[in-house]
Length: 217
Ligand SMILES: *Cc1c(COP(=O)(O)O)cnc(C)c1O
Image (cartoon, helix red, strand yellow):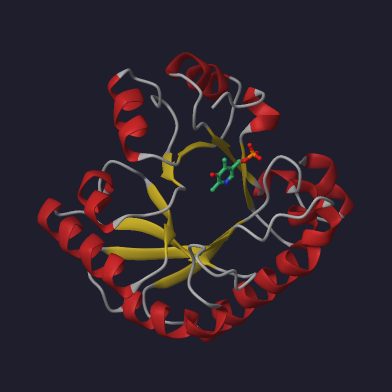
């Protein structure tokens, strides 16, 4: 990460490492936190709640990075420091409602389907404007940036155009200065692609395999 940052003329300290911990147990997560990851990301609500009960996340912010089902939102708001995978008005409404009931503000990122892949999570790039406007006027929800999972490519360098397109969106949305929307984080890049993502402007990467080893399904 530091190498990629320096090669692109950026300060390594400005790039956050989210350890993508799905399928790895509480002990492994605690080890990653002790080693200095900036946050822990989980994909499945059940797994997150179980590992949380085991004290897996003490000392690090917890991010939800999986597909966000509306019937699980209640269990995540206030439990996660950030929900990275918000992609619809309905989800924003539900998060706002739950956050209001708890008397908190929930930090979120908006996930963009930058490859326009059918059936994949994320708002279409052309619908992002409208969704941000909606989020900006929803009490209890604070948007802190964008997240993307580009289409899988065998060669990580082939992801670069998607990362570049996300960075451009991030810049464009920053320039619009919506109320209550803060374009602080651009979350993209995984084990095989984080270097390309950082070079394109990511300041948050989500890495599983390169930290924990292969997942055993
Ligand atoms: C699993 C996962 C990652 C990390 O993937 P690796 O290839 O293991 O680094 C990143 N983001 C999301 C949303 C994931 O589900």
